[in-house]
Structures are given as structure tokens and as C-alpha cells.
Image (tube, rainbow over all chains, first blue to last red):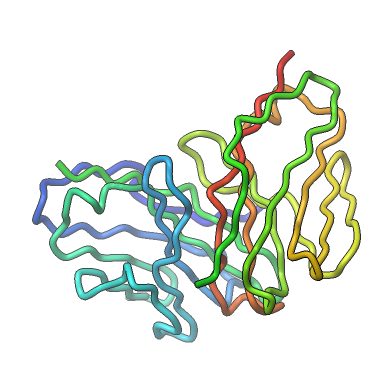
Length: 112
Length: 113
């Protein structure tokens, strides 16, 4: 079964550094999402992406965050200047029309 | 604000028993309802989706939806130790994929051998 692939699986970064998290969705997915989950907390929506542009974003998704689809396949989430509270699991998800969301394996981001 | 509420548990059941997981949601406009299983440190894995009032069965899993009561449940029959995980209830407002899921905090299930 096709998978949504995320890299890296674990990233440790110093506070204030930029990080880029990468996702390769399944080719027939139409909608793409980034979610995060702080340890012990809910899975929270960050941003959705459709037709090569942001379609919706949450309050969490402030100016420190950006998303791109640089080459038509990879899908990236950039955090410009990481803070300690950005430490979380970050999940990318893809959706075929009318089907459930398929989540990637996640990237554990640790900001020290 | 759209909210999804779940009892955090842990819910402990003996192997072979039925586990019953419950979820309520605040947005009456919700159309699509999902149950995900999440093992510790792993990503959510889709177990069931349900869109209409009533029951939907898939193997050992049955999802139940009551839109009037804004209530979704998941029954797991013949529970196995491998079912021990956190079960996440998620809803969204449309029947297509262009709206984000709103998740509950999850119910931790422990199946005792």
C-alpha cells in the first residue's frame, strides 16, 4: 500500500535555527495537510494546501511557518526560527477526494 | 470553537472482551467522522470512517454515529493485547478532503492478557 513518507524521522535543533520538514505524499492525493502533536496533547491542524497554494491555516501557523511544494511532489514545512515550544511530532497528511486522511510516519522535532 | 471530547482513560479491558470508546463533538455541521489508532510515538492510522447515522461494521470494529446527540462511538470486539493503543476521534465539516480534521485528545485503551 502506498505510503506518505516523511523525512527526517527525528530532528534535533538549537533554538532560533531554521528547520525544514519534508513529506512525499501519495501521487493521487489532492489535498495536503500539516498537523503537529505536542507530547501528551491533541493532534492539531497547522495548514492545508491545495492546488499549490495554502487553502486554510490555523492560529498556530504564524509568520514563523511556511509551506512549499517546490518540485510538484515534495511538500515542505519550514520553521524559520525555532522555539522550545515548537518541540512536537509533525505529521503530514494527504487526502484523496472523499477518502480518509493518510498520515505520514511523522518527524519528531526536538528544540534545545 | 469546534471541540471533540473523549475520555482520556485509560480504559482497561480483559482479552476477548468488548471495548467501548466514546466521543462527542460540538459542531452540528460536522459531516465526516473518523476513528484513528495511534501507538506511542507513531502516526495516526485510520481504523474506521462513518458519515451516516447508525452502525458501520468492519471486522472486529463497529462505529456508531448519532448526529442528533452529537455522539460517535467505536466498539472493538474480541479485544486483543495488540489493540492496546490510543484511539483518536476526529471530525470534519464536509464530505470531501478540503477541510481539516478536528481531533479529540484520545482514549488510551489497555487490553490485559
